[in-house]
Length: 274
Ligand SMILES: [Zn+2]
Image (cartoon, rainbow, N blue to C red; front, side, top):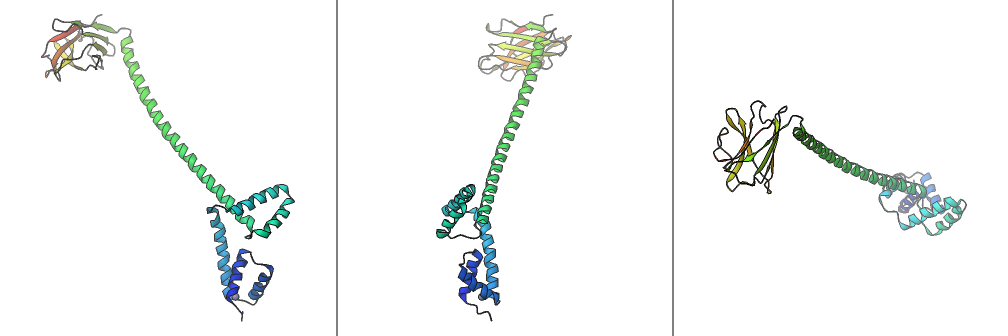
C-alpha cells in the first residue's frame, strides 16, 4: 500500500516546478519510494507540462520580474562575485522556477529567432521590391534603347551622304502658310517628311503622294498635331529610278478612295533634287 492522499498530487506539481521546500520534498520522496502509480503518472504529466510551458514561454513577453532578474543576472555575471550575493537576496522575494537560467536561455533564443525571422522577412521584402524595381528599370531601358535606335536610324536618313531633298511648292490651290520638305535616302529608300501649318479644314485630310512614272501613288494621310506640325517617316518611299517627287492633295476626311488618284485639289508639289 502506498498511502496516497490528494495532497501528494499538489506536492508532485511543486516537485515538477522545483518549488518544494526541503520538508515537503522529503515527504513526497518518502511517499514515492513506497511506490505510487498515481503520483508517478502525475509527475510524468507535470514534468511534460513544465517542458511545454518552458518552450511556449518564449512566445509571451517576459514579465517585469523576469526582466529584472535577467538584468540582475547579466549585471551579476559581469561583476563576478556580486552575483551570489544578489541572487541570495532575490531568493527571498522572488519565487524561482527551476531551472531559471534555462527558461531565460530558451526565451532569449526564441526572441533571437523571432528577430531573425523578422529581419529575414524584411530583407526578403526589400529584395523583392528591388527586384521588381530593377525589372521595370530594365524594361524602361530596353524601350529607351529601342526608341534611340529608331531615332538614330531616321537621323541616318537625314544625314545620309547621298540623301536627296525635295522642297515642296504651294500650288494656286494651296493656302500660303503650307510648308513641306522631304529628305529621301536612295540607298535605303527611306524618306522623312516634315510639314508645318498642316491643320486640315473640318471634314478634310491632307494626303501625301509619290510621283511615279505612271502617275501618283498614295503614301498615306498627313495627320498634324494641334500646332499643325507633322512628321512622316516612310520605310519605303519608292525606288530611286521611279520616285520623281512628292505631291500633297486636300481630300475628304479619310483620304481618296483610290490610292492611285487624288480626288481633291493638289496643294503642294516638289521634285526630288539631285
Ligand atoms: Zn501518491
